[in-house]
Length: 564
Ligand code: ADP
Ligand code: MG
Image 1 (cartoon, rainbow, N blue to C red):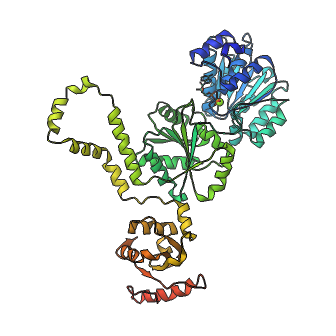
Image 2: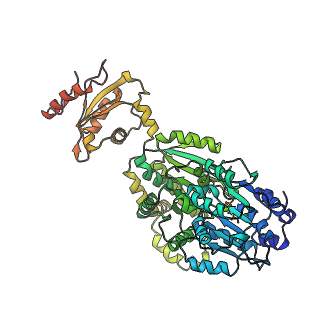
């Protein structure tokens, strides 16, 4: 691969990127830069996020700028304020040895007058968000007659965010002999449409496989019931104590909700979404960048502006509406040669989508089980032990206090000391998980329903709780597991009615089930579990049986068997 100076870039630019620590061009830079330096052809460049697209167009465009003119020559359009500012910042650092170059960022939510003033001072490159650029063009604050090149950066994302009208309007106004460059991670249909309409014989440059995810990202799926999403999220976060990542939600509201809950539950997490003021967003992003914040809960749009390279995890709290977006999300981890994990929390109904995703990224998802309380505690404890083993001890600083500490702890032996130090950190954790039922794998539960087991060995039971107590099949299975302490009791048909419930379970557990249930309570009710009449032949004759049972039950013959 060539070096920067072999691509035809002028010395000032090579020097500037060397200062930034860029040693050699990335593949997309290698392909795009030479073209842009010598021809004015339109280009569609597709490459995953994090592959260096800004410099790919930025460096050659800067080189081609007529520095003697102060007129606007390049317009760069990108979806968010953060990104637009980031691009301007990047271009400024590339051009630090070319003092005559001015780059101005313009975006909504900030004084338009100030932005107009800085454009008037003479700015050859403008980095803009679509809405604000449109405003400025309409106000004639930007003289578009001198614009030579328009760059659509993160074009797919701009369309996702509903900027189609703005883009059309901008592209309609800029002189036709302009050069149009389109940079994107994916090429959805509506983008192809825009390209066809506004670009002339574009050169297609693709780096890596189109629409595929980064190589060193593992994709994990946890199936849960929708209502268990949050619990699953917490458990997953607990299972990865050193997590540094983004939790993606679909809406601003969901984002705020989840972040609030996490914060409430003691996690180092905060929300990032469009309802926050720019000031608030800046604070959150800075905290996250310098790792004071470990988990960011964000919408796709808001997270776009973040340039962070060492994320350990991406968590899809909900899958994105547009599956292409998943590539963006997961592409945020596993960067710069590091490995990363992209986690999806999904329900069984989303299996079709997952299949589609696997196809898109051409990788298989690994199905995971939500960690049990025990697994989490173990992981956390060993994480602590590892930390103790690896901690750097500043002997000089602690020495002064040591004699007194030794004296105080003198009466404890080694075992006692270790037990105590583990407990200091973990009592809360252990306490929390001690009384928490583990999440069931909904797929396993489903298999149990569909009689994956041998039905002839089932006994039918009557139980005195029902829809009234909001009993659901999964909850019932949870109850069976919790009360008996056994996880694999085969369960057959479950029939939750208005006032009571019938269910089938492995006959060999009949005695155990009765013992376990009949002393227990559920939502303030004392449970009654009886062996019920076997349903034979006519399936679902349950109603009749039910009536009889209810009568028996109401008459107070609680402890009598309904069978035979
Ligand atoms: P993209 O727009 O493709 O998502 P960026 O242009 O934002 O990617 O670049 C991603 C990161 O890689 C930035 O931090 C950038 O400074 C860095 N980078 C870009 N080009 C190089 C290079 N040639 N060598 C090393 N790092 C680079
Ligand atoms: Mg980019």
